[in-house]
Amino acid sequence: MNTNTAPDNRAQALQNIEAFEKAYDYDASYMKVMLDEAPEALEVFNHFVPMASHRAHAPLDVYMTAKLTAYRHADCGPCLQLAVRVAQQAGFEDELIAAIVLDQGQLPPHLLRVQAFTKACLEESETCEELRTELKWEHGKATMIELGLVIAAAQVFPIVKRSMGYHTACSLISIDV
Image (cartoon, rainbow, N blue to C red; front, side):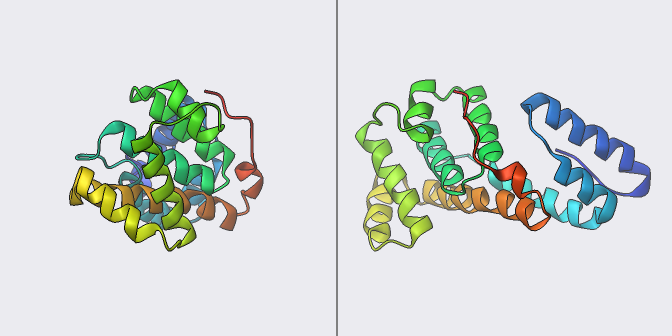
């Protein structure tokens, strides 16, 4: 999303935020406040956003399993719902999404390892290194780098929103799959 915040681009930035809200049925009020109150902060934030969706090497199922698991861990309902919509648009199967975010159904063994690795990263578990080694052997270092980025990125959005007083926007909601 291009939201260059120079004064002459403020209207375009607002239009881009509103288009994002409409496209994903997502409340980006916090971004509008950033635009109004600290446009330079929004510009910095926007440089971070690509990290949350960078995928060049990781298989879609592996990447989306890590992404959805990380967003679920962050306890941010609207952010998780946004991640679900992005996963659906990318062609990730609804049955797998439901297994990850709603505990409905089973994941195949290779995705259970990805889910366990993601949780181990987030919880600083002793199993993290063993799982990382297994996944690196299966998918390569580039995939592991991308998983690290998406796992970390999932934590940023809820924290930014909560720190701005948008914690009610981060409450748990019913996830539509």
